[in-house]
Length: 314
Image 1 (cartoon, rainbow, N blue to C red):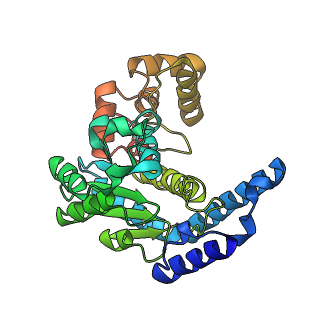
Image 2: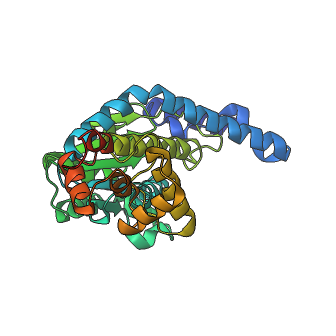
C-alpha cells in the first residue's frame, strides 16, 4: 500500500506540479500513531511554514494595498470578498471585522460565498464548482472601477471564485487574488496575484491548516494596512472604531486622552457629544464645533493629522 501511495503521489506531481497543497509528505507517514505532543509539534511546524509563506509575499501584498488605497480614497468604492469553503469563511471573517474595528461602512462591503450565506455554517462542497454562480453574483452587484475585489482559493483553481474574479476584472474593478499553489490560474485571473506558497500540508490536502493560516494572516495584514492607508488610524489608535460596548467606550476615552492630553471628564463629554466617535471627539476637544469638525474631516479625507494641522477654528 505504501508503494502504491507513493506512486500515486508521484503521478500527481507529474500531472499537476503546482498542486503542492495536495502532495503527501513522507515524513508524516504514520502521524496518527505518534504521541500527542509530537503530533502537535508537527502541526505547529506547518504553521511556521505558513508564516514564512506570508513573509515571502510581503512586497506583493504591499503593492496590492497601495493600489486598493488608490481606488478607495475619495470614492464610494466597495470592498468585495470572494471565496469558497475555508477560504471563503476566512474572507467573510475579515470583512465583518472592518466595521466595528475601523468604522468601514457596512454598505461598502460585499461577500460572495459559494453556496450562499447558509453554506458558511453548513459545508456545501459542490458549490465551489459552480462557475456560473460566481459570474452571476458578481454581475448582480454591478461593480465599478472604484471597487476592490479580494478573492481567495487555496488550490487556485476553484471555478466559482475564478469566474467571479474574471468578471470583476472585466468590469474594471481592482482584482486581487490569493492562492497557495505556484502557477495557480487564479493568480493570472487577477490584476494582483499573490502566491502564498505553503507547500504540502501536514495532513495531505487539508488546506484549513497551513494554507488557511497563511490566508488569515495575509488578510489581517492587507485589510489593516488598507485601513491605515485610508486614514482610519492615528498614532496607532483605531480612531474610527465603533464604541459599541463598555470596554470600547473606555478604549475611546483612552484614545481621546492620549491624542489630546485632556482629562477623563473632557474626553467623556466630547465623546458623548460626538456619539462616541473618537476621531471627531478629538477635534471637539481641540476647540472645533461638531459640524465644523465633520466638514474638516471630510475635506481631508478623514485624515485626523491633517485636520489637526489645519489650524484653530476662526
